[in-house]
Length: 306
Image (cartoon, rainbow, N blue to C red; front, side, top):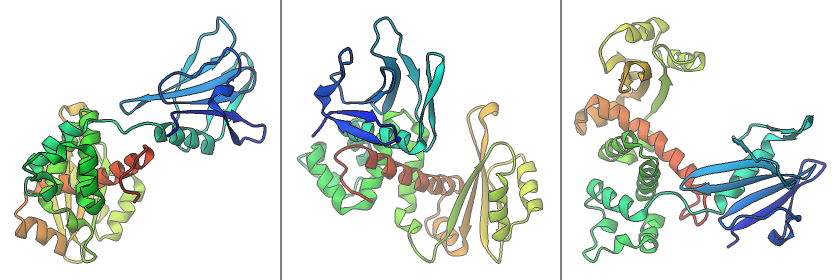
C-alpha cells in the first residue's frame, strides 16, 4: 500500500504521477503519508493528514523562501500566488482529486476501542457486541460484522468520527437514531425531510419545498414567532412539521425543521413513544450517518463501498 504520492501539473491541467523518489533536488517528501504536486516556477503543493485534519502548504524549492499555508475545498478552484507574476490556478476537479488522493493514503481518524466500548452501551444486544471474550475489541474481527450489517456500519463510523472531533451533540443524535430503529428511514411507505435555518425561515428553495408539502409561508412565519420549542403543525393532506430550536447560547441558536408523513410520525410518536425532540434528533442523525459513510469512503481500507 503506497504512503506517498508525487504528482506533476501538466500544461493542459491534468495530473501525472511520478515515482516518489523522483522529486527534484531541494524537495523532500515527508515520512508521513503525503501528496505532493509539482508546479511551475519551482513551486509545489504539499498535503499531509493527521487525525482527520488535513494540512496543505504552498512552497518553493528555493532556499530561504517561507511556505504558505493554504486551504483546499472540494469542487472549488484554488489560486496560488506566484511572486508577483500570474497566479497558478488549479481547477476545481484537480483540487477535489488532490484531497481524495490524500485521504486515500491515510487511516480514518478515531480510536476503535473507545468507539466500540461506547457503541456497546447503545447496542448492548447486538451479536457483534455480546462476545464474552471481548472479540469486538479486535478491529479486524469487528469489521467482519460490519460487512454483514449496514446499521452497525453506519452507527460505528458515525460514532467514531464524532468522538474524534469531540462532537458530543452528534453522539446524542446517534442514541436517538438507534432508539427510533434506523430501518424506519428506509421504509418506502415512510417519508421525512430536514432543513436548517438561522433564527428565521429556511432559504427560498426550502420554503418552496415546504409549500409543496401543504405548509403555507404564513404558517412557517407563525412557527418562527413562537417562543417555545418544539413547535408542531399538522396538515391532514401531508403530515407533521416540527420546528426545534438548538444551540447553547443565544448567538448560536439555529432552527431545525423536520417533516414526517402520517405513518412515520405514528410509528415514532405513538408506537415507539419517542419524545418530539428525540424524533428530530433521530432524523438529523440519519443525515449524519450518510455523511459518515461518505467520509469513510475517502480513507483507505473501507469495509463497505456504498
